[in-house]
Amino acid sequence: MKKIVSLLLLVLVMSSAARLDDNMRVQLSQTPWKMMVLSDVHLMAPSLMGDESTKFQKSVQANHKLLQQSEEILDSISKQVLAEKPQVLLITGDLTKDGEKVSHELLINRYLERWIKNGTKVYVIPGNHDINNPWASRFFGKKSYKVPSVSPQEFANIYRDCGYGSAIARDPFSLSYVAQLRPGLRLLALDGCRYEENTKNHCVTGGRLKPQTISFIQNQVEKAHEAGCEVIAMIHHGVIPHFSMEKQLYGEFLIADNDYVSKVLQDLGVRVIFTGHFHANDVATDGSLSDVQTGSTVSYPHPYRIINVHGNIMDIRTAHVTALTSMRRQGVNLDRKSRSFVVDAISSMTIKYIPNNTPKATRKAVNSLLAEAAIMHLRGDEQPTTAWEKKEQRLIQALNHISSQLAAFVDQTAKSLTTDTPTPDNNLSLRF
Image 1 (cartoon, rainbow, N blue to C red):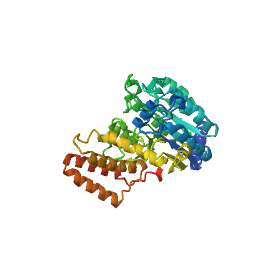
Image 2 (image 1 turned 90 degrees about the vertical axis):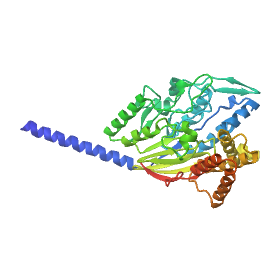
Image 3 (image 1 turned 180 degrees about the vertical axis):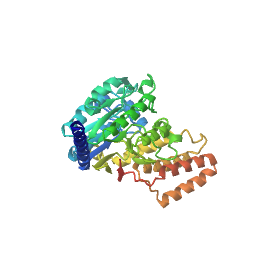
Image 4 (image 1 turned 60 degrees about the vertical axis):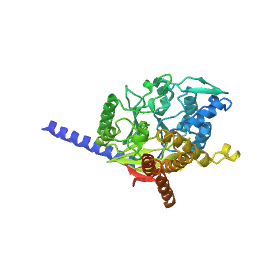
């Protein structure tokens, strides 16, 4: 009888302790704390630019990014990181221009280690540009020269203080890992890049999650829940389409089988995933899952996110780099310059869809309209004006006299890019 009483008392003590631990965890999670999210910083070490050669300038034009200013942009953001002192900072891939080892080393030595010393835990994942990249180059004059990129193992070693060294678990089939962000909250950092498929002349843009990585996700989220932890995730490629024609026009910017991946995460109770890759600042939802996509720091409108967390609520706001000293001295407007790259990018995209015999003036009008639509989408919270909608209608009417097929394509694309979902893109609250 005494043994039974003792056993009952032990059970009561243990259950009381368990309830106390739960209460402590909830109490700690209710303490407000701060996160920041960056994406697609595409840092390029200045030593790679040579003498700002003609070949480098052509590369800048082809990439449609402010690569020459990538360091100055990060300097500006770094001041904000040091001032905000977030407990956690996430970077959702594409850390470098083209995976140059020297650019990775610059990022960790000049920025990430400084933020860590200032009290911020930094977590990174690779993007499609970052590993085994055959385009890693140094430019000089009219020539470019190959420079070392990094292997998956080198990537994890360089960023050992940014998630890989302190991970609770790592996926042996990818560079995915799990980190304990706070009491009661874990990060599922997912690597969906296909760098092992890169060749000496091709770097794969698209992404996928291997079956083994899906199993890793399921196992780790279950373990997190058993430990009383909620889970948020990050991955480079989008999981939910951010405009209706994304799969048709930019399928490589979504993870392969994205509907299945979204369902897996929802079934596991994951409610928020941070993404990048497309360089747009947009939030898309699918059922209970929100895909919070953050735009590139080197592309219009140069955004980053600051998130205040209390309990299981994230209050997300978006900040932007709005000016650079080097450009101001030259009389160059940052906003106008980065918008011009959007026009160039749209022109590169539409060339596949506009018939060769289309008049030059018509082609220019199409590119201008779709660039304006893309700019609205990249900034988020799209709200086309009545004047813009009337201009779009006039162009579609004119295009119908040339090609009804072209008119339909332009109309669908423009409306797709400028039609926003009810969920705000820049400043919003989400439950995780």
